[in-house]
Image (cartoon, rainbow, N blue to C red; front, top):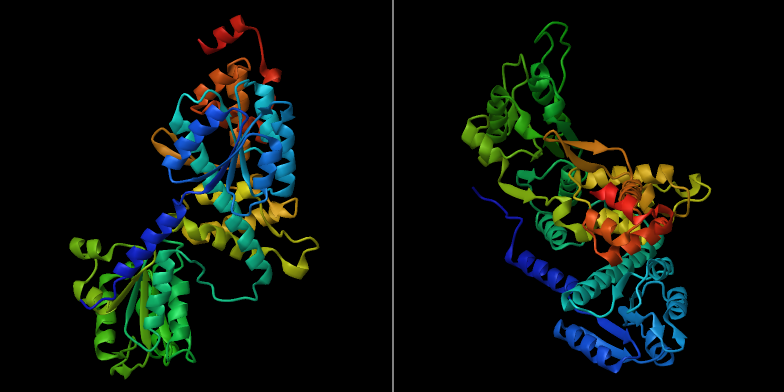
Length: 487
């Protein structure tokens, strides 16, 4: 079978380069008035490849904080007579994109929540018994820093965008797809597009048509799975007057697409008898209408698409091998969205611009909060790009501010019940807040116990408390009562 493979050595190289960029170390500032601790932290982080700057005072730190290349800062909460929280507040006001991690040997719930509310990314308690904990926190902060920066860049691009194609993406897989489409621009071979539902197979087919010598002709899509079995043949190949009761004659989709492109979407749904006639039409470049006595030549390009495994269907006997050979002269496979997560921010901003309303809305939404973008990137998107567009459009309808927030997103939560997965119509924020409140209530306000019950580290738990404005004091009860609750 002659086929143009979607995977290539060049694509593999691009994927490797993208992974290297995502895992690249950063520029980290350490601010602490204990020289021994500074040296210890610097040794841990330099071993990971990070460039490390050190400061023993607020004044010394401020000389480094203006560096645009700086990614993350670890700042002690108490710097002698100076206050690390005040420094945190000033830095977040001046450079909100810079990620700060607070450190202290005097950890309390109040100081942790206070630091998170002022914008700290995380909270580390000294002494650092686990170097891996320090390293992991810095890598996570660096990852968020890059995501935030990407978010800002995309918002700038969105404001300057003057329209463009619908095939959005810069991941290695999407760049390879664009190269494949470019290489086919003078080619009129039959093409088979494979991909999960919602990946954009029809968009790829339209792009093929627009780039082809047949661009001035019609583009005719048909969903083979949506046509009743009794009329598929007539819809595709047409019928003559009197071919069946009340038949007045119809040209059929093959003739309607003459001079252009016919998309047979979900071609795997065609029944066996129609598969045979489709094979004949592709081989002879002619069709015979239902009730007709002679074949009519047709000049068109056929592109087919499917989310089903046609090779497996061939093995089962439900799809013809000879037809698969004819349909798959050139093959294009679209990766699912979960395999190209780096495209999610770009797609989210694209759909934001598409559905924000423009001049029809008094105060259109202008962007996404960083927490909202994090939630979108973390989700697995079983419905792929179509599901992402629906989530953005729904969030815009419910948004109550100039930016989409995490709570505006209605991402379904999967939970197993009696062996089945059920989607809960709750926001992630609502579910998370409820879990935090329940854990605190059951543990009598004991943050350590509540964090362990949820499988979280203390600093992560503090950050989530700050995010939802929760105070552990409101859940505190006597230790005896707490022991009864958790026993």
